[in-house]
Image (cartoon, rainbow, N blue to C red; front, side, top):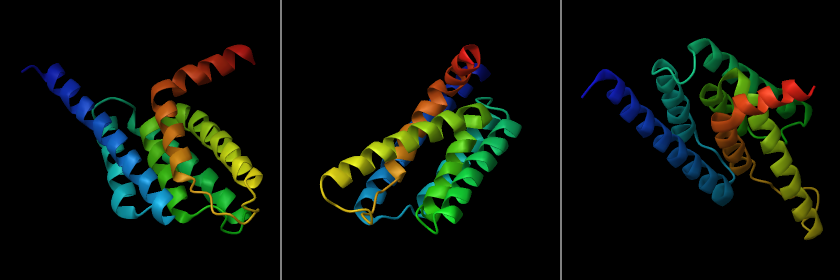
Length: 160
């Protein structure tokens, strides 16, 4: 097997792990309201491995993690804990996967989905204090950011 083929097989395995971990985290967040480190940290580590394989540059992965985790940390502080610490760590892990160019589209999608979900909860009479698991929103945003983040940023730059 050639070196290029090995990288392709490892990349495919990495993306399968990405999907599996995001699904596990989403189910966990819906069921328990928590995103445990035992699932978030492997997601981050697998993202770093993918960066080493050439899916993203290491600099872009680290910058994406700092931006994603940093933005959600600011939201957590300003909302007085309205967003959990697991969401902050998940955003940082997704930043590693998406890189710097994909994390903003990923977070935008996550916040739009979370807003719609919150509106549905309000319309159902759940009240403003209802718990909204944000992990699934981040997971969907992360998938979009990984696969379409660069294109979304290029489209945005072309339009504005």
